[in-house]
Structures are given as structure tokens and as C-alpha cells.
Amino acid sequence: MRKATLIVVASIVAAGFLAACSHSATDSSSKKGTGKKGKLAESGGPIPVTVSAVARQDIPVYLNGLGSVVAFNTATILAQVSGQLVAVPFKEGDEVEKGALLAQVDPRPFQATLDQAIAKKAQDAAAWSAPSST
Image (cartoon, rainbow, N blue to C red; front, side, top):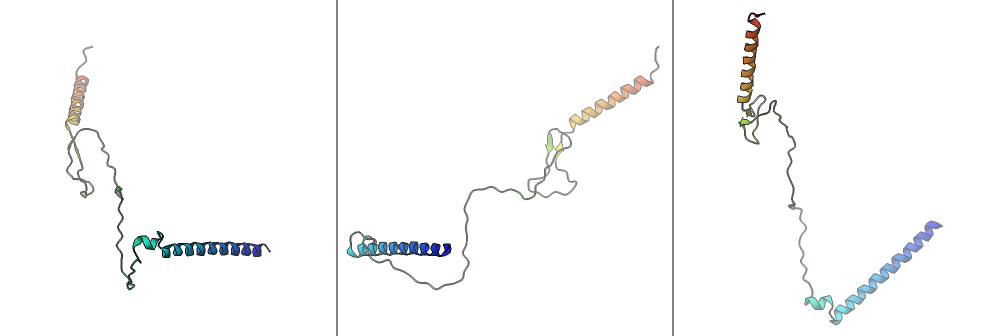
């Protein structure tokens, strides 16, 4: 019973909508024919229509937009020691092999620390082997 009522109400609403649409269409066509500023009168006459054959073809698609490019694979390179870089023997984008030299750090501070440690060791060895005066 409820389903039948719903169908009747929907049919009445659809019939009213169709009647309103056909009424507005006849009003606008009568205005065009009279020359009282209808669309046909404003445009200066009928609009020409062309016909072409249907053909299957590719249509190029162009998308314009702003964005950024991000690499799919990335590598983070960290130095084992800190210091000033003396040389970087590769350019960005170059392929590098395993074990290749990527950056050269200034060796002078490390050499100075090594020299100090060697001198301290020699000093301690000399003090150890010297006869004690007491």
C-alpha cells in the first residue's frame, strides 16, 4: 500500500514538472517569434550548424599546473668525522660506485691531534724508563 502511494505521488510531481517546463518553453518561443527582444531577434538570425563524420582518434591532454619534483629514491650521506670540506669530486646527479670518494675533509686538524698523541706517548715512555731519583 505504501509503495503504491509513493508511485502515485511521484507520478503527480513528474507530471507537474513536465507541464511547467513545456509552459515555459512555449512562452519563450512565442517571445522569440514576436521580435520583442527574444534570443533569436538579439542574435540576428538562426545559428548555423555544421555536421562532421564520427572518427576515432587520440586527443592530446595537456595539464598545466604548479608543483615540485621529488626523487623516488634518495640517499642520505653522513660524514664519520666533522670538519671543513677540501674537495667534493663528484657533481650532483652523477652515478657513484660503492667505495668511491665522495668528499675529502681537511686532514690538518686530525694530523695535529695525532702528532700531539705521538709526542705525549714518547714523553710518557721517556718518563717511565728514566731512573727515579728517590
